[in-house]
Length: 175
Image 1 (tube, rainbow, N blue to C red):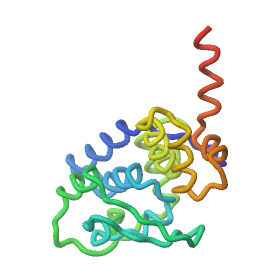
Image 2 (cartoon, one colour; image 1 turned 45 degrees about the vertical axis):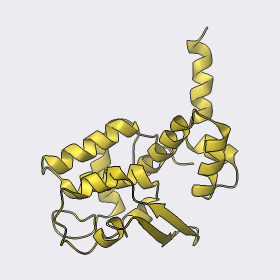
Image 3 (spheres, helix red, strand yellow; image 1 turned 90 degrees about the vertical axis):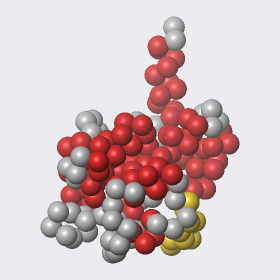
Image 4 (cartoon, rainbow, N blue to C red; image 1 turned 180 degrees about the vertical axis):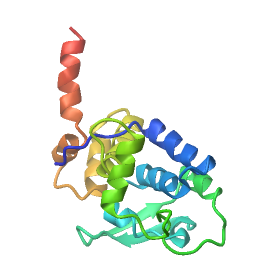
């Protein structure tokens, strides 16, 4: 398990859209929006192209697990894409120099825009926490997420998302 934590989904989405709309860093804003909505590892995320993101559904082979994964491009991503010229081709996440972001650069930017113990992995965790919260924090959602994340069990997913610690912390808060 990595030492990073998740970023609140709405906060991440809002920050991503602000970076796009203000033209401060549209490419990185798009990376945030896509990252929290697809739950991919950063190396798989950085491989996505504008053509991929303009489809309704994409199929990828995950780099780490070599497993096939089917992803749906939701309305958050579609809304973000509306701010980009429809004729842009190539990789979606490029720095101002025109090169695809390195993982190290993504980590530096995430630390710049979000405080705390965050990294590129925080986007994936944000996706997981949102799915879990949207399904009333159910065990069922953890089973689905463990499948999406290719974890060996929902217990691994629970630990990965930091859910156990949050529940233990709540014991003290509810006395």
